[in-house]
Length: 64
Image (cartoon, rainbow, N blue to C red):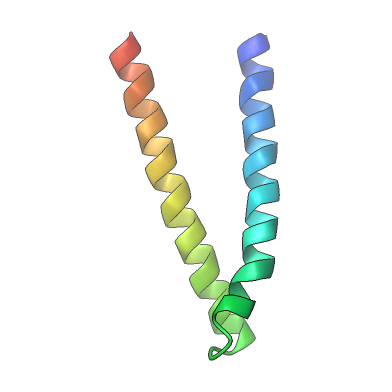
């Protein structure tokens, strides 16, 4: 049960991190329209998240 709460907390942290990222990213790309900046920001965050997730999965598989 402890492992489940660990992953739930990680998920909540990632959700909060996404909220911060998507609010800051459009101001970094001020030349883009708001919709395009949010789309690009979401794509950047998802690619970052997938790389981290793949690393965690590979690390867990190597431990077993």
